Length: 253
View 1 (cartoon, helix red, strand yellow):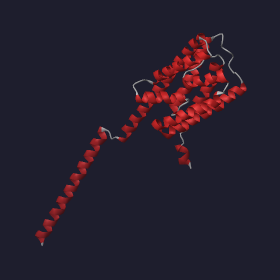
View 2 (spheres, rainbow, N blue to C red; view 1 turned 60 degrees about the vertical axis):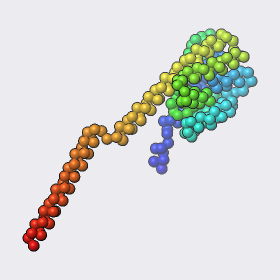
View 3 (spheres, one colour; view 1 turned 135 degrees about the horizontal axis):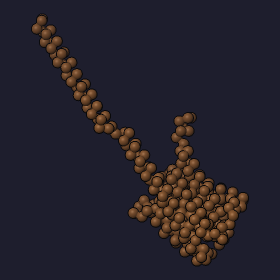
View 4 (cartoon, rainbow, N blue to C red; view 1 turned 30 degrees about the vertical axis):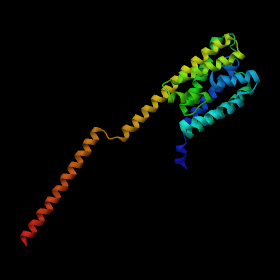
């Protein structure tokens, strides 16, 4: 029982849930309340919310799950599990924020602060989910797959998808609001890139340490060689002694 509990990836689960909660908090309190949209699937969720009044707690499930299934082909079943957990957490916590109402006062008169905070919360939230091994939204899958198959860095893929969605968002936002949204997506893309790069470096360092632990050092190789040589010499001496005793016995008889 204890062994099974040890195998549960608590750290990854906590990272994914914390990231999704931070993301939903920032999306509701900074993006939606101040009309600062985002790019990618998250921007589409806000687009549907503003045009059709469909809650992101519903649309995120439909749009994200289809892309998560696609991502499983490249990142395995654990990726699908963490992504489902992320979406479930985002959907649940966003519904909670909607029920509670805005916690942060409106920053509509301080749009620079609203844009920076929106980008920061989205960047940290998505970054933690990716660090935990999942995806917070469907566009994370697109960004991860494209960055895996092409030389493009993950933050550049985010920027491209973000700009496409921002262009669509002109159907309900003014150029003035899109300007602030550009600041938000630039900040979020940069933060996601930093966290993703940190995770890749940490993963590479862990793999290097694991390799070093499995491979004997030069000093260990020398000791093993010396011990093997000593054992071989001792065996040869024992054989010589046995042959000498045999000859002496034959001579005596």
